[in-house]
Image 1 (cartoon, rainbow, N blue to C red):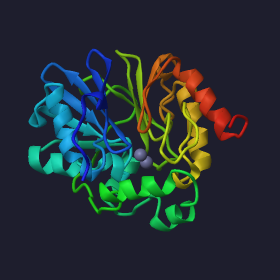
Image 2: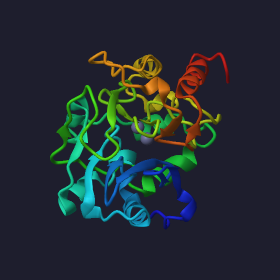
Image 3: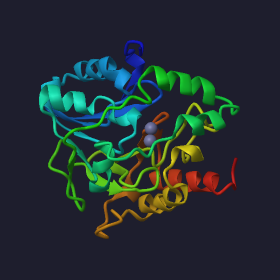
Image 4: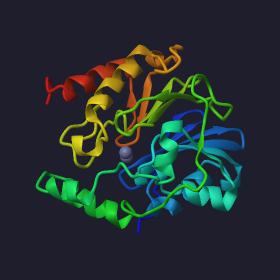
Length: 269
Ligand SMILES: [Zn+2]
Ligand SMILES: [Zn+2]
């Protein structure tokens, strides 16, 4: 099982925004008074840490207004169904991610793909940790709901979904306009145990459903558009990147995207 949550696993990003690191993966708590929205939930085995993190920032589990999912991989979806069943929490995501969260299909790296990369530094230890915290558990969300894309959601922090497909088809990042934070999920990360580099980057290729499309989606963050309505989402003005994996990155998100693209295209290693 996962170990207990430590103080240093919770990073205060802004007045009401906290990033929490579980088993090699992050979730985000966006508060508004006594209520909050939870963006992602860690692995199934991170459940105790997830509840401990809510308690640490003063949010009762029953007061979580919604779980927003960046994408339905097990390291992000882990306790979504538990919150829904136990507390009636709505589990919201992009419409293209809804069947994935129901597990009508699974677009997640397979054990075979991981074994094929096991000679790479970091891959085998990461895979063993992931297995221990439910990386391959079958944990469908029974009633995932789609939100309307195209503007801020009526939730704490007024998050703006930014469809950024490629890692999965329905992957969404979330812009928190009031705090200048982009919660980028796995569309743009800053580190991963299987990556040799630190700093803004795409995850290694085996993790993406469609890597070419994931690379294309970086332009969604640069252009500051939602990608569907053409409305400016303000992503270009964000100055803190809170990724699904790795530490937060403070500084221009636009510059972070440029750095990730250079790495992904092989100009920087
Ligand atoms: Zn993922
Ligand atoms: Zn992930």
